[in-house]
Length: 164
Image (tube, rainbow, N blue to C red; front, side):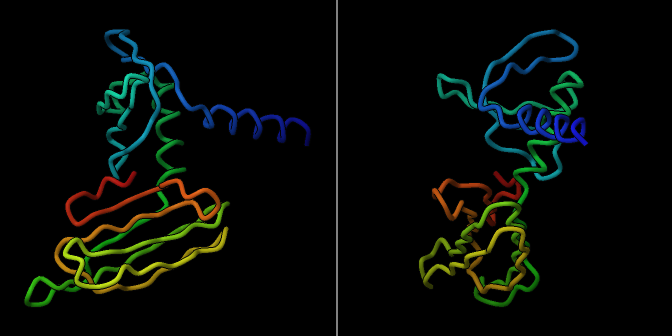
């Protein structure tokens, strides 16, 4: 029992780091930075250096330790899915939004870029999954925020399915 708790605590601390050194498997080149975004399929992860420079790294080019970290980081930050389920004339679309709150309560905000309609806001309690449909224009953004401190957790737009 103690070993299980220790292993869980060690795993949690490994993936709670803010900044880390990322290493390219073939060249050994390193980069220090914080993971801030990911491709939906996990093929790439975006790193922000302390200087503010952002770059994308292909996860398959990283060391196995960094690939494991990236896999867990991506899974922990993949809380939102928005996809078009119906399109109609005039650029109107219906999207299906699925929010997985995980261990913290979250707030989801869905809005159209045109500003024609008021944003839809939904609060999702911890350990709850919410699925709903929303009518939007052809350009939309769905953002997921922490209910407690307002930090952005995940985002999808009509232009980008990368998540955050």
